[in-house]
Length: 261
Image 1 (cartoon, one colour):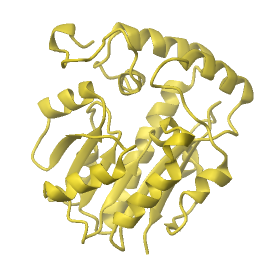
Image 2: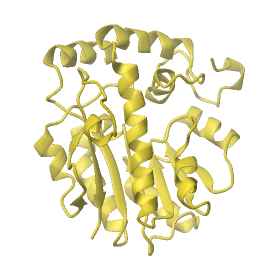
Image 3: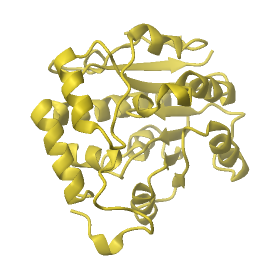
């Protein structure tokens, strides 16, 4: 468990963080008591949340491999979370060791951990998806990403924390506009088709934290993907993207791997 003495300035260890909760669910060690307590409340409501977190991670890494095998060598991991192995950079470098990753998060704890463990080719950035113009301008200005060449935007486990008044459709459209042909988008989003009893319980359990999700319909999420070619099996449960008999879960997470023509 993380040490309070190493806290970045301004971080409240008594307020749960979605990134640290996710780290706990994945079996990491970079979380605080408040995050563990919060995660345990969620697990009482949805005991399969740890399994779902691991499946989401596997989907992310599959998306990285798909893009890398298609020739993409630049990866932008948005909402990257606290570093955990295997990383996005590990997966990309299995295909080509020259692959570069920018790991973006708006949480200063995540940024501190990522900076401490960064390696050549994997650059952390403190930025917020809610301000895509600023993020994209920095990526270009700091010579981290060449937007004249294909990139892969990884937006996994993030978009359902963007509220309606923060305009998620416009954010994805801005990412698409920045992408060269042959680029990829790897995206997940929690579905409003999830178990209704779970939705009520989870909303109550997460109230007042940064982990309050906004679940959306399949049709609305699909509308964000206009302008992309969607790979099979389409916008589907992440279980359908994995090469095994992954179990059903009370929360339905939809995933898609898309290519910009």
